[in-house]
Amino acid sequence: MCFENNINSHKLIHRIKLSFTYCYLLKCHGGYLLIDTSYPDYFMKFIKGIDRLGIDIKDIKWLLLTHHHDDHAGFAAELIKKAGCRVIAHRNAIEPLQLGESEDTIVPVNRRVKFVFSLFTLTHQQFKFPPVILGENDVILDGDNFDLLKQIGIDGKIIYTPGHSRDSISVILSDGMAFVGDVAMNFLRFTGIKHRPIYIEDINTVYDSWEKLIAQGAKMIYPAHGKPFPVSELIR
Image (cartoon, rainbow, N blue to C red; front, side, top):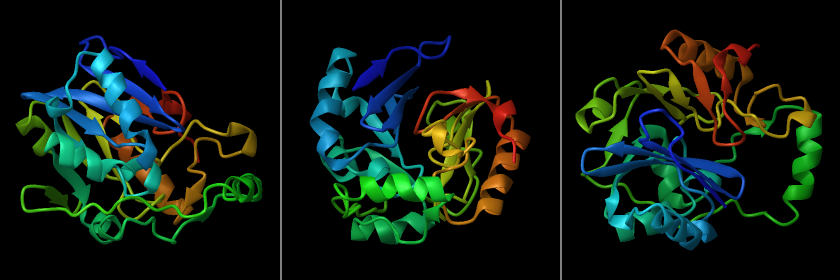
């Protein structure tokens, strides 16, 4: 577990590594917005880590899920219960979140990924998590949203970026920091993914989402898997 304090010059963002997943805390009105969680059994490690940062669980006012997969929504239900936070998610995430199970709609991007993850699934077979039931106070998106983040004190916008999954959304701040979930990665590069997601629904849609990120002002990519990299490295 790694908590990296103040990853931008304004000292308003924390990057959190839980297992294979990087999550991000962004300062907002009255507390923080958390982008993604990790697997279900990492909740207590998360609590201990934010405590070291001087952040109480109740300080988390919002949870933005870039998509519904178990390594992103794993402890979302427990966080919502303990923090009382509101959720931001795409409409296509509603059903799989309610089921508490990753949709079986993605395939490995190449044969090397398929081989590596055939070994991973020997110990991680279910891809399930405690169900997340979205309520009337949560924000369900149908596409891009340029207003919500500004309303809660974050100078940025939410962009619909499918391709890895049909519910994928990203956050782009005014300074070009882009938190993209899994639509781009810097992870398992030996498999030849070249910043592509290791699993995809449609590779051309991934590339369309990359072009959209660039067009919307992304300058530095902060993926959920791997270290940040400049947007210039997003090449088909």
